[in-house]
Length: 321
Image (cartoon, rainbow, N blue to C red; front, side):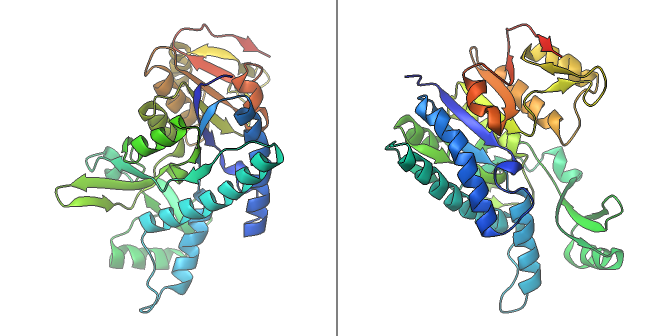
């Protein structure tokens, strides 16, 4: 049996594909669990991370709608914790169901995860990550004046709050996550990038920010000494010249080659670029580590080297049309 340790970063389509009801999201996770159980059956030890963008956005809407003296709206870090628990609960049920159907005796657990950021990160001076509902311009400007928040106009659709997206520097729960996975458990952690926090002499404090889920998965993969970082997205392979007649899909590539492609602006910011950057950071963090980018449908095939884009520090790059 293969005992390699894999951190799996699930994309948003693994949870929600348009229907925001609890039932629809739980059904999507049952489909996701069927793909994950193939990996578990192969003998990989896995830690699962996931996004939370639509879910935390809906929680913020609900907080706004119910905001009053008696039921005050909760801050962003607390809403992130709510989404971690909610999605983790759904995912545990879905994976338990798939394990039972395949006669696999394993425990699955969700760890509400705090991700440490640096208060001097330049992202705090340039908030860019839109969150929550759309507002009219006058309402947004009133909120900016009253609550010291930052709002920006978003592609003609209205004004949205923007928050910093600092880089993760530590995962506070990484030791317990590592202990659990090393003892054969399936661990769900760092949901939505984890709850952004900072630490000072008085303790640990939440901050109003959103951490990129791929960079958080990469940091966790390093801290638990994973062998593979598997980033799942909407496409089977990373491509250069994307959506052009000369598009080429990457299969086996190197850190150096991908950095050249980044210099050539081959990857879209806010889309494929952070996934590629996270993959590079992990692949070069220790000899023998590998990053893989592919879709959920090809996750198992990618881990047995039959699909996906494989990134290492040594293997030379090849492309397929």
